[in-house]
Image 1 (cartoon, chains in turn green, red):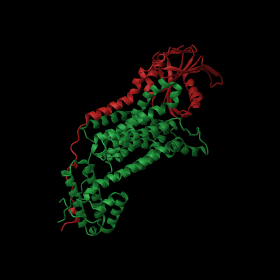
Image 2 (tube, rainbow over the protein chains, first blue to last red):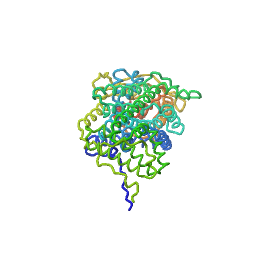
Image 3 (cartoon, rainbow over the protein chains, first blue to last red):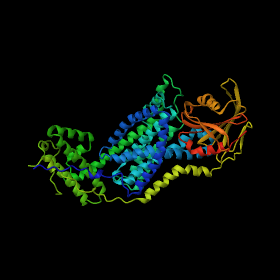
Image 4 (cartoon, rainbow over the protein chains, first blue to last red):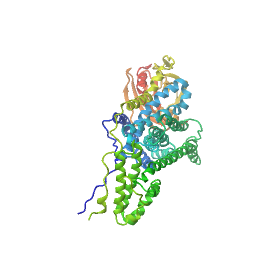
Length: 406
Length: 210
């Protein structure tokens, strides 16, 4: 008789967004609900003013935001974050952060005007208020996600992913606002706005700023850094400071090479140049920071799983493949070619559980923790299951050391 | 015989190495505190800063406005507008500001047209030259101000040609029984109009129009 056991989801991905027992969850819900009323009212106004332009604006921002969201999601190489939490980060940026920032910027704008006078305020208010107000409010979204689902945010890259999606949500709402309210909301205006704000500037904006702020949060709360927390505050401040500085430069009259409107002929080509002068340095900084974070994740994975080799939970060859996500995909494809889809699926699950094993190792205090033993046993039995599939045994990767923990 | 899949094990129950999360009241409270300070702190700090004492502002003997605390005169000038009939309307312009928004006042003695025509003139000959991508609401409201005067009101959005920043505004036009015209243009940048709209309304309602 054939019996099939159901493949279950990894327990390390089970953290839910809906956690009514946590005060952070209710703070999130209340703030998003209240600010959501304002945000919906604003969208309603835009829809009434220019129905076609409003629809086109949303179509264009989705066209931009969808691939960026997928890219950010895939940047987390080893443990992809749960979709509901990613949506929560996006919604916070789009609804709560945008609405609260409008109020916060207004209040601090009055302070700038009182201290510097009207003329100074006209030139510098955007640079002196928004980078602080907006990065704090978006960053608080990442902190709330951490408080709601602490087990899901393990390291710097996780912080980057949540921060970048929070920033993407902010950018999407702001872009729609600009397309309608600044660029006129008609077909030509919306397309012009799309060129200026997305094509010429889309690489540099809130996704980068809040990605860095998220990395700062990740640096503080990481479980994979042996340094005491107070020693991690410096690097975190550097990351958050880079985000605020980049945002300040973007909003300030410094290095303002934007051609005066209306733009004609070659002036259109000056726009991407003008945005690159202000935005490219920060983009390069973020690329460097993400590469460093990836290297750090790879080191962490290797360190965490090295000792598991002698426990037979992972073989040296498997570890070598696990470290490189591209190799993982290639090995699954090779398995599918040799032993079919089921074998490829089991191999994929084995790889996921081996990465989860590294997570479990970084969360338990002792080598004798039952959770660690259970996870090792799971990895071994998945490998046994894989090798039992006809054709898969010969294709299975790596040799098996003598087990010592059975 | 069992299928190979039958040997695929299920996961151990529960999240490995993790327990039930604590409620974390303190960090949540800190988040709420930082949020409150960031959003509202500017208004509190601004309230502690010295505010120039602004007395009532009178324009051409046509209108007197009593600026609320925090509002100050940023600019004052004599202006002229071409009317639809080809005549030139002369008057006085004053801008009151409180940093994140402004109230532009235009007083035109013996304007010779009604409120609707004056509103149309202001949108066509003033706003459309001051702002790019101007969009004016289709509906013009007929309202009664608290001081008993009839007025017309419309809204607009556009962008500042120098900074490119979005501007939204609400224009209230009054033509008094004596034939004097007054235009109140309350405006602000990027979604901030609603934050000052109550103060704008209070100053407009409290204005004395001759």
